[in-house]
Length: 136
Image (tube, rainbow, N blue to C red):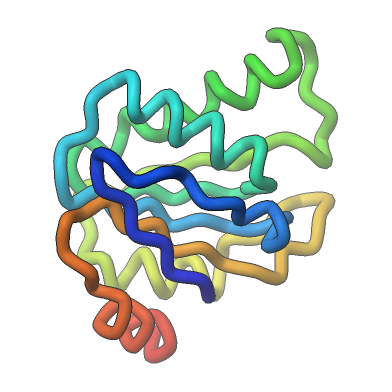
């Protein structure tokens, strides 16, 4: 599990060494559309193959990552090994998203070994979220 915290001005780190990975996007602060598009493209380019969004307007992340994945392939057919599964959890506690990630978030053709917890927040919750994830 790799914890990454983003604020509105954080430079997006290189996490490509973790790919292919599943990503839990925890949106605790509103994200402008331009920044959401930038982060979504970064996830696609970094090797995300399963994205689960939770928090503020989490449903828009499903669409944003899907569009970034389509853009990567010029809106042509996406090879199955590059197809990113995207879901959002707007009516569930975060603990259930952690459980889902550990027990259900698998890609149909690619073995995913790593998980990135992307926390979009001004507050570092790495210790709390890592502990909750381990116990899920």
